[in-house]
Image (tube, rainbow, N blue to C red; front, side, top):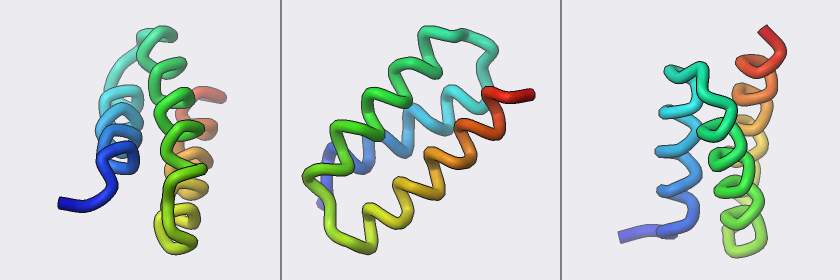
Amino acid sequence: MGNRLYQEASKYVDIAKSSADGQTVSRAKNALSSAFANSTEAEQEQLREMQQELEQYENR
């Protein structure tokens, strides 16, 4: 089944990247933060990458 918080973070980042909604970006950031503390090192690295993608999207 995997880490539920990780899965939610991934979903919210994908949604935020296809949306211009600031609230969705905020939810994605919160989901990333929540998932980070409860993830393996490998998942944490992927979460960092997702966070960088989100920041790049946000700075456009």
